[in-house]
Image (cartoon, rainbow, N blue to C red; front, top):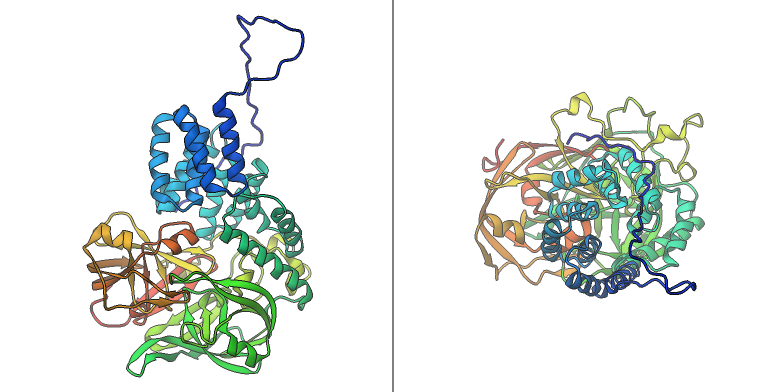
Length: 557
């Protein structure tokens, strides 16, 4: 996607003209201003939204619109509120009315947010770009561009947009959280403490996650000062993947031998997971100490599972050894019937070659960026996803002469040898690849998930392209328990990364919870049954992937 031109708007002044014709003064005493009922109700709606009471805020916004169908503020506020409530269909219905009845920059920003959540990223970006280039730029337009830029690994551009969003409206809760992620760890801790001390436009799940993250930041102050880092001299490896079985006849997936402390474990290699997640038994045998509580979320209908973050003094994978690395521990005796999971994102400072077809993991250094000195190689932890590259105080310094700008953030770099790679969207540890389903002209976004046993369609995607049936025989179980409703689709042909895969009787699940957590519509999942025949090379840094097929003829170039 080309980077569109964004004009800098440094200051906007709104002129206000008071019309006083036919005004009759009856008293020299100052009179209280008469506030129209709709203005009072609108203020109440905004206050409820800012305190996270979204259902009540929605009622107030609807009350305003019942009396004033031209209120662009009420339309925009109601759309944002419905998105917070995860009511995507309701938000679409309201924004369509808003465009017809009360078009404005705020409404256009809200339209972009609805289109973004629906997966129409190009349309969303155009709306936001038009607003920030207008005479009435909006903080949430800058924030939307930042979110999109981050997904496409345009980190320098994202940082600029976050700064503009925060400077335009520092009271916006989402702008404040985005700004917080750019701060060094010590400053982030203080900022988060102040943020949580006030009412904010966050749902209960977000508030819980932020409180747990604050506890984690405080615990890290007592942990070793050095972040997780590579201590081995080697900078590339090749190691074998190991078979993990569901039962004696069926392959579950591939795993890696991982030594955590002095304890060896077999962890499922999972491109749909983040960091390292182990069960309580492995943590106890490795002698790990709890740092802070956390919640583990995944597929399943039983909600988040309790767990904690612990510090591993040493982690060894193949010929690499990393020290002082946080891992997550699930408060159960098993993690999806395994010792645990290792997300491929832990190696995101390397070019990650997942040769599933030959059961090999290969890591090597990424192509050197022309504008970046040699980078340090670390093992990434899920809880440290948002530690900025410029956080010099928390990382080992390989070169004291480096300038802060040398450490980023950087925009995507496509090396000449990677010009034919396909573009990925990255949301934390999750990798989404544009995928065409059947004859649709607009791509949907599929999660690359080697921990998911089979390739799946979302319920929305399946209903749009084929016939869907209730499935009685299949049972799907994830980290958060069994999925209550399972479906299957007659057929679907998927086209992604220069490959085409026809499927019959494909599994269908309602993936709304994953879509809500990421923030855009997830059209399906490329699972192990597809990935096992591929050699997948992933550049996490720049959001690029190459997939080379080496299996049966039903998946073809």
